[in-house]
Length: 425
Image: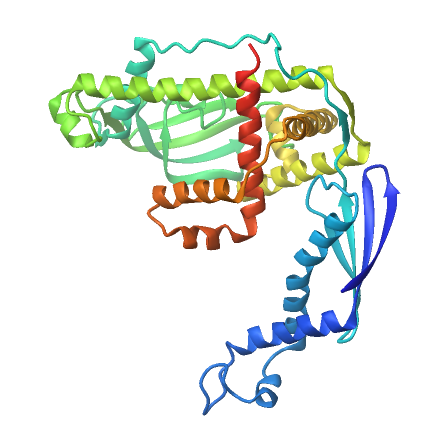
């Protein structure tokens, strides 16, 4: 099917060059053509049923090759891992180095699993935290539910914290309006912390129809154009609105329509169960993290710098994408946090190193304990998802087809964490 050449190109990096045999490549192209042809319509014929010579002119050969390559890559990669002593840490980089209708050569660059000699992972004295749910926790949860069901009403009197002010404003520095400092009919909840420190406090007490100049100083970690500068926002208040919280009574209980909740006592019991479950999960997660840190300290870990850098760069890119979606650059985000770029980079590398070491611990414990997930167990977990979402299990498998390996691995990691939780104090 193929010829492969394995090269160790660096600490933790392996390049595998694959030359696909001509017959295999031709078969993949034929299958790709038939798949694409099934969706081609030729006048006078049913979709996909026209003669091949008539369909060929309607299908882009580039699309045929793309489809063929995408169908072969998973097979090639599985064979590489099966036939070579390579343990990948993450998804490989793939480059097509030679391509024609008769030739296909592909290069896989694989980051290999770093080395870890596992230390003690049972009988560790970490200390499991206790979970306590107070009456105040329950009251706060019910108050939050009341806020969710609050109505908004126009208020005749002065604005107070928690009220929403509807206003126009123009921000000026040195008497000149600056970009992004103007808005109309803007709704601002006082006390939300949305605006610059001190801004919202100065609007407490305003009434509809009033004008108010709000004087602020931009923080030093703000955008370069405005940081540290004094500004005046000329505000014109159109409306003040307040939240009307529903009374905690039988009518409220009936309106929220929660399963199993018929009385106030039922609601308190339900919220107590929810908070207990949430705090238990948080305490368990915190405990597992401490156990993993202790195991890492007991173990010998060797993580190449290249692996740490790759992980850090991946997280940095994810953060940049999230910031871009929020309309911010990473530079602006760091300025808002008051964090220097070099501090951010150093912390990112340190966090990545801990993340990788923790992953290695879980993998090695799974090997040491000979844990695995059988096909029957995988089927059972898929059936639970099908039941939860009222789907057929075949549809769940189809939806998760490309992630079944990852899904199976996640089940395994959960089992490792269960084992660590049960075998440490």
